[in-house]
Length: 193
Image (cartoon, rainbow, N blue to C red; front, side, top):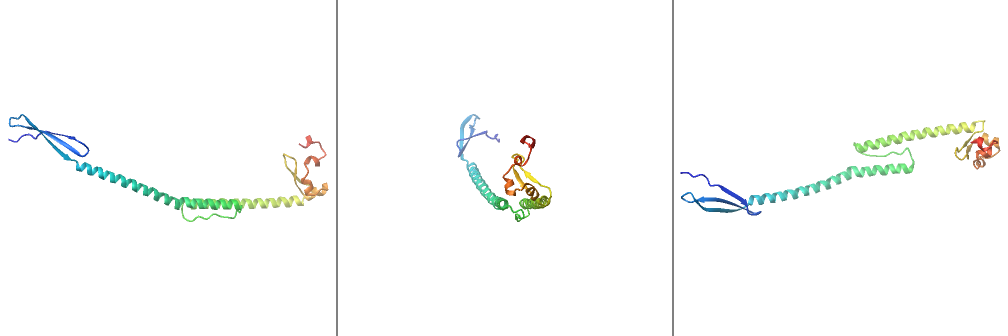
C-alpha cells in the first residue's frame, strides 16, 4: 500500500542554513524517529549577493548620472547664463544703449537675449527721443524773448536761465546759479512760497 506523504516542518537555523524535520513512523504506525536534514541556503545567499551588487551598481550609476547632469547643466545652461550676465553688466557699465548681447543657439536663453536686445532697442529709441525733446526745449528757451528761469522747487535755488533773463537782470548764468528765487523777487518770502 502507498502511504500518505510524511508531514515536513522546516525552520531557518541561521542565515546560511535551513533545517527540515519529519516524523518517521515505525511498522506499527507509531512515531519512531524524527528525521532532520540541514541544507545550506545557497539560493538565498546568491540572491543577497546579487542584491548587494545591484544596489552598488545602482548607486554608482546614480552618482555618474548626477555628475554627468551637472556637467551638462553647467556647460549648456549655467555657463551661457553667466556669459549673458557678463554681457549685460558690460552694457550697464558702458551706458551704451546701442550695445547688444550675443547668444548662440535656438533655446530659451537665446530668446531671453533677443528680448534683452529688444528692450535695449526700445530704451535707445526712448533715449534718442528724449535727447531730441531736450534739444527742442533748449532751442525754444534760448531763443525766447521772455526771461525764463528754472528753479529747484524745494530750495528755490536757480538752476538755469535763458539769455533774455540774464539780459533782463544783468547777471551772468553762473552768478544766477548762486542765487535763490527769494533774492530775485521783490515780494516777501511768504508770497513767493
